[in-house]
Amino acid sequence: MPKPRYIIGLNTYDHDVSACLLRDGEIVYAIEKERITREKHATGFYREVIDYCLGAEGITLDDVEWVVSNCYILPVPEMEDRLVYQDMPGFLPDYERAEATKHPLYRSRTGKVVTISHHLAHAYSAFAVCPFDEGAIMIVDGVGSYRSDVMESFPAADAGSPLARESESYYSFSGSRLDCVKKVWMEPDRGFLSDEFYNMPGLGALYSRASTYVFGDWNKCGELMGLAPYGRHDAIGPLMQIADNVLTVPRWSPDYNQPYVPDQDGKWENHPSMRHWEDLAWRVQDDTEKVLLARARWLRETTGAKNLCIAGGVALNCVANGRIARESGFDKVWIQPAAGDNGIAIGCAYYGLLELQQQPRRFVMKHSYTGKTYPDADVEAATRRTLVKAQTRAVRSDNICRDTAKLLTDQQVIGWFQGGSEFGPRALGHRSILADPRRPEMKDTINSRVKHRQPFRPFAPIVLAERAHEIFEGDEDSPFMLIAKPVRPEWRDRIPAIVHVDGTARVQTVTEDTNPILYRLLREFEALTGVPVLLNTSFNVKGEPIVETPRDAIACFLTTGIDHLILHDTMVSKTAAHRFIAPLVRTYMDVAGLVLSNVK
Image 1 (tube, rainbow, N blue to C red):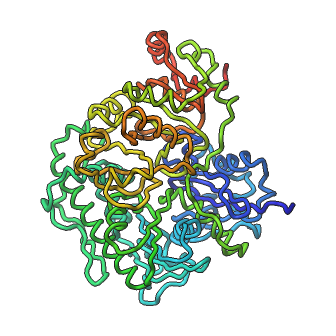
Image 2 (tube, rainbow, N blue to C red):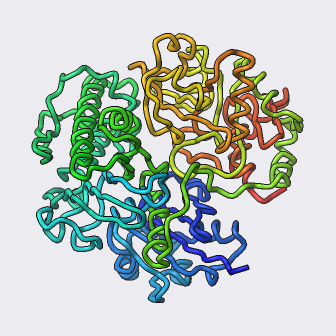
Image 3 (cartoon, helix red, strand yellow):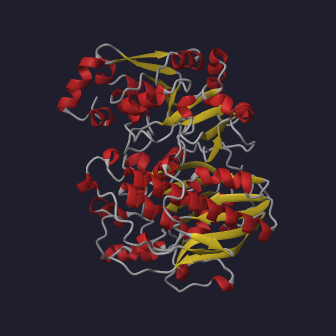
């Protein structure tokens, strides 16, 4: 039997550090650093994600044939050289510096370590694992590589200055061949130190600028999308326009004089600028949809392609994705589930497969459950810790889907932990919080007891794939919760907890072959209620990453209002003692630290 061939792809140093391990061309593990360190959007060195993948596969770095990496700031070798003499704690904190200098991949000049440019990595993440033999690719994000660092050929008419940054990239593909048909650049802008991104004239950069203006954080674009339907149409004039396939993004004027300043303005929800922020959110979302639709239609007409693949951070805009899927004219649309910079690791790995190993495409990413599976022994160890046992009861079930469905019909909030974790920002039924969608108050229940999010943000439905067309408009599959669909009018009052204010929902369709246990749970719930839909949200609280391990899940369970925790086929419930023990523990120590510590 031939020895397996391994490739590692890496997204390094800035937000969403991640790794992807391929074995003979197939994804075996992929993980984000945040899931391990518990620091959301974790930056810095990449030792943890490499160790996770190698350990899960039972191999060492010596077994890996190629390591392909990207950092959108600079090519990785140059980035690491600069980090030698420049203190940049946001990219390499002091506590990681010593271990980085000893790591064999840090500043490696061996022949098996390669770096590639940013949008090229996004493009490989989109088409190399898609279900199409040929098609077109749309890459749109906040900011990519400098033009001087871009590796692929692009039309001469699209040339920018050497310091221009990638904003949008469009490609065609056939088999393993990739051709760039258009590049859209952002030229550097004048501004405060390290402020160029905020004012850059690009689609993704503008959306992040609006996110910063409304929330004080450039990386709250999902929240901005959720706020948009509350805004008044056309209360604010266009922020960008497209004509003859040329995008214009005017500079903001002093009329935009109500930015949220977190340390000064107090609680966001009660801010007097809320009406203005809602109007701005509507405008930037509407402009974004119009520009993306125009680009998609141009791409279809230019390439003649019937299939479209999408990646880049803007591809997480499920409302725009829904319109592209329905209105752009492509027959089929596939969106990389880790569309943001976490998915760069996948693209880097597949560049290694197709370009360096010269192997053909043969793997389709049908699901995103790329984390390692924790054995039942880990579940048992987590539930038997002293202060966990003192306030919980753990019982094995011979039919966990049936028993969980009964609890859901009783309006219980369920923490659901199965198999390997999802790669990307969405919880897709392996690290989820589940609830009954039939009562409108369930949304407020989960927000007040568990998630502690802004009340305007919607919760998503999971639905049996074969029933989705009955409940939601549109026939397209949405396995990764990346397409928003209108809820059919006759169903809106039946599942009100997942219907957004505009009558839409961010749908995940579930099939038996990709998630058999979640599929069975939906079937059991349907048998009891006649509704093949559940409310699904990520298994975490506001500001924390999605849980990765059984201990993470128990820590979240014990510190929130989740009623029951399902760990594989074990049901964990809180006992009466929890009401007394939990306040004491919170008073004297950090519960999460206690559960996650190695002290028994």
